[in-house]
Length: 144
Image (cartoon, rainbow, N blue to C red; front, side, top):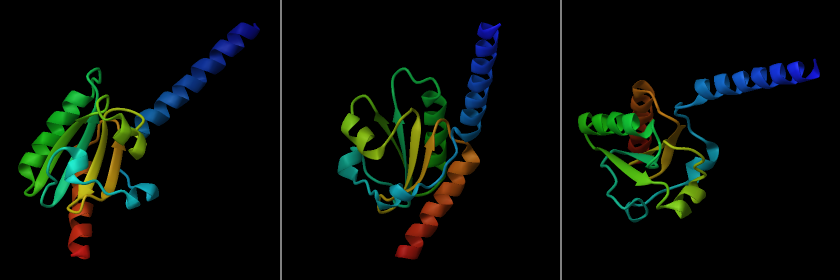
């Protein structure tokens, strides 16, 4: 009987964890500690966009990274002044550690100066990426 109770408790906890992760995964939000982070073109290995840069950290074995890549490339192709940069997390561990990236895909939205204005762990939604781009371009316009 005790084994059955333990099994049921583990199943309930795993279900709650999965539900919370599904609800929070892919949501773009700004973290206070990201506000002080600026990334340069040299750190990214690519030029920053004129208005906004979408930085995607991926790995070879990441299944959601492929649709995220397509989504961000499509957005970067339709939004003037936007750039999409994909970084292999396995090759850039020092940057991954510095930015506190714990899973792939992780997407960072940078304003024109390279400041992080949004972050999503997991596959983001198009509407949230577009809203973060609006925040990034509004923030960079306000600081100009």
